[in-house]
Length: 341
Image (cartoon, rainbow, N blue to C red):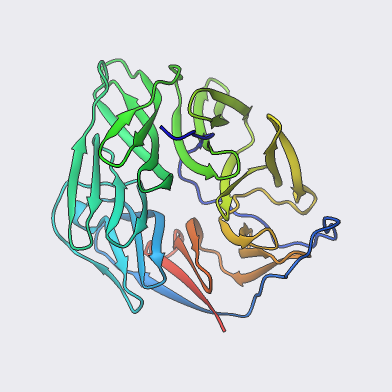
């Protein structure tokens, strides 16, 4: 088994990071500023059912998947072919919370009913059903990986009668999915990001105690699951070029020598959100209270203003996609698509 990584987890949320100025430029770093000359469009996904798209992944700008839960299971999987979004409308019991792959003909889907699905380039099919003794259901919340034969899924299992639950990590070795041997933690793992430099997973998690929801971050190196953050401030994990970044109350951290090390402090600007991905440390996307925020190596700006609620984003070399929802008027899911000129 390849060495693994840290994991962090959290429930779906649509929070946003602000537009601001930052005069700090790290010494000795040769910055090539990220471009901001995007042409933006909005693709509205209209359904007669309740649909909440929550995850997005693609092998290219012409092969993008957006998935989520819906009141009718036939509308939970959407695909963009470079021209338009399409739903296959094949009835099936799929209420996915996770999507991830390495190519257009090998895409994984994590479901809420103890199953994992796979797309082979032509069709989706159930890959397997997975149970943990003593628990009724398994929820896969997100998937990430280092290679086609080294993929990880995180989520939780629950027991209906008692309400008991615990976090789980699964691993795919190229042929089968198995549960990792981790400590029993009463937590719901919600997101996972790889860190290529340390060969670790970073995982978001959420726990409920009498005072409210507690946000937690874990790192998993294949042998030890280590808690590196716990608090009532929302903490998230993001990726820039397969490196993990942790955001807490507008401060972005790296994990260095076994501890969180502050990288960018945006707290003075009111920032409090997730790093949604980027091409480099001088070209990545965040969210602002007024729309899509971007850091170009020297400053932060809101480069697309909107009051839509954000659920996820994906960054390609020249194109970016963000899945949002109009919570105030239509209730429709809207994909904001940016293309560099």
